[in-house]
Length: 376
Image (cartoon, rainbow, N blue to C red; front, side, top):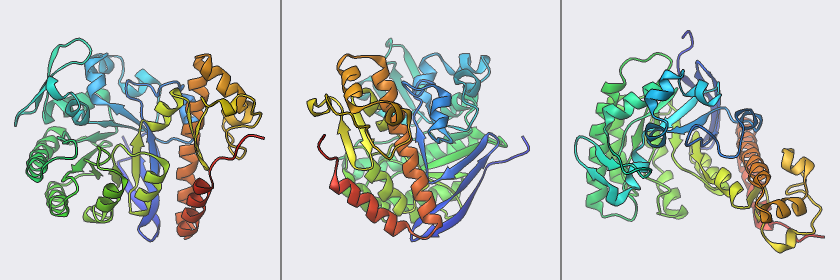
């Protein structure tokens, strides 16, 4: 590969920044939102449709893919990019968050996590070394360290012990990752909502050295106020010349608040999951297409949106196909949501580049406060 992984900040406005990540498989414009393709697919979307929304990079899931169809099978079939027909960059998470959610089905030790599959009850072990092996088999462009992410609220002692374990696993992940030109490894800052633990985690990660740094352990039940409280200081603890990735976030106002605090990358299942459950995200807030008030409404979801759902279909139609449980409902609403999220990111990139991010934020919040208007 002639192109290596790199990151460049092109402009800043306050703490917000815009730039681009260069990878052998293409450029990622930042701030970037990564649609989630858990099982080698963004649910209800064709890969070319995801690209048409403006997405530069997708997220794949180590835990789910190791269980089904297995990383070894994907590697034998040419790797994850070929398998799912996505030629652009792919980031894979380490599997740690999903294993955390298994609760009684897992056993945590220094070596890693032994767990039973939620699919068939089969026994598996995920360690830093195995996570790196799986992500290499998948052919991930951006690989995440294996970490342990405690659910909040948790005691200070539990969060501190978890952070220290994650830092030991981060070093083992770096050693197992090895030298892979064109591929990047991100460390993950932990520490809950405690400043001292976040600072200690950041220093340990910088000592190990990574291509990029994630802020983990947020959006796990602490609430937006506490999350923003951490983001008021956590990004600045990480190297300025490396991308900063906030994992698992989130709602549009979460994303805007994170970018304002210096975050470069985000991911969340929300736009696709919402699409399948009848929720549409627009510049004026959220629309529940199930509501009877949409049954006779000829308007699009958003008159200013250029996605296929808004160009070609009315709220009345979207209400009908959702109520009728037709597959096109999830397809159209997911396309709209992903399109809106990418427009959100593009708007922030332009505003930061132009030095007008504060004004852009003011309009963003004013429209959401104004809300969706009643049907004619």
